[in-house]
Amino acid sequence: MKKMKLFLLTILSAMLIIGCTPKKESSTASKADDSKPAATKNDGTLNIANVGEKFGDKFTALWLNRGQLEQKLMFRSLFLPDADLKNLKPDLAKDYKVSDDQLTYTLNMKENVKWHDGQPLTAEDVVWSIGTVLKAAQVNAIYTSAFSAIEGADAWKEGKAETLSGITADGNTITVKLTRPVGNFIPVLGQFAIYPKHLLKDENPLEIHNANFWKNPIGNGMYKLEKLEPGNFAVFVPADTYEGAKPKIEKIVVTSVSEPISAAKAGKIDFFNTNVAEFIEGMKSVDSFKANPIDMLFYRYFIVNMQDADGKVNEKMADKRVREAILYAIDRKSLTAQLYPELATLLNTGVPSTFDEYDKNAPKYEYNPEKAKQLLKEANFDFNEKIKLRYYYGDQTSINFMTAVAQYLTDVGLKVDVLKFQGDATSELYQIKDYDIALKGLSSFGYEEWYGEYESSNANFVNIFGKKGTFDDAINRLKATSDDKERAKILKELQKLEEENLNKLPLYTTKTYYYINDSKVKTAGIYGNPWYNYDMKFEEWEIK
Image 1 (cartoon, rainbow, N blue to C red):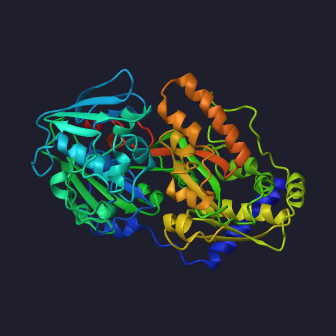
Image 2: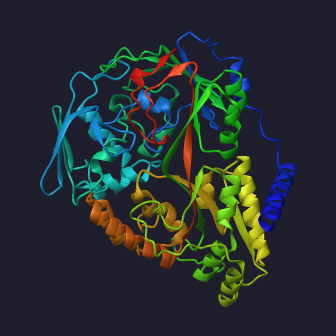
Image 3: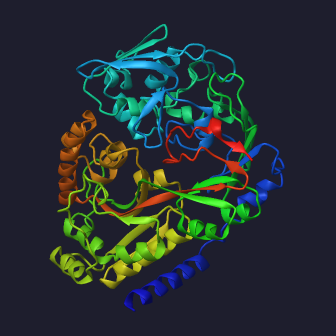
């Protein structure tokens, strides 16, 4: 009864928030559909929805986010992983070998591979791309972490060397020399998109994500861009320069959609993915679509603004007992069951409890408001202080979740100010930093990303956790090995460090769902983490 009462309170609170915030923009799908090419059942067109993302006048660069379907189809990497992101086959590379000491990689490129403008794709494109990404401003940490181990990387990044000495090209052969083993070096190369040197070599690496190139990107994959209508849609057609198996689908239209359910019911989209609970629930009423749930490491958690890189401490959050109290104050089990049924799994550490590497002795942080109050008293917390609770997700379920969290914290005597960030998430989290606790998501390529947020070399997180280096040794050992037993041992060690420091407050992991218009589209039935590059065997997809 108490839980039901709380849930009703949550919904009512959320309704109050909605009434005080600007009206949600109407579905972008309805705007876009007025101008996008008309689609009929048998016209050979696959209509894909990018849910919650608008096309500007430029495409998103791939070194930060690799995964959208059109990105996979337009750009390639040296290797192509399976959906589990572990097993790989050659793609732009033909083969490779690794020295016994795991420090030298020799990669041979395929011949006669071309960019969409007809120019040859060469080993020099690879060497230039890896060197440039080390100096780029917007980069996924998996690349900088792996490529920083290349000989000469520090001197190159600091401008003390004219070349990145540890990577060279001789004809179609690339040699990479590392200063330390990197256990996932080949899987990382399976994610890293190669850019065309001949079109981007004169760009400032710090601004390469803003280059005019992204208004009409020239890729090397199965499909090429035919048309971009900013704010609405993009059209892709098979690339005649692609040397691989030819696709069966004649045209792909990718549309910006803020609310996919009505668009799916109207037959305006054929394929999309989401982890938004309200969309997943709503799609149950769309009979023509088949739901395909995927388990993956998609984390939701609170990060705590503890101190900056110069050591200035946020006194409200400095005592670990305050951070523990916040976790004990929130009934995570009830919240996830009510708001994310069949979608979320509780999280206690960076390793989900269903995985073999999970430390079964880790604290469970089960709901205990009396313990939360006691911890706050022991920490001499000033209850006149206001906790600034922030988030950047705009879906209604996230709003409900944060409203309920604020109520839980209020129930143990805390004053709470809960608001959605007004600016972009990156600036708000790591630069503006006007919060005590912020809700964050992470689609993780592996444990290295979750634990990499604790590294003293992680410029973003050093600015909110402080530069302590507590995790560095264990993280470096985790990165260096691919041995399952050794990794499990190191992960137990990292979980202990998490418990001792509690810089991140774990909440839950979520599945993602792929939705396919089964009456119109036949796929290969292969689905993985949508934010990463993997082989969907798109050449087998067809319009029925």
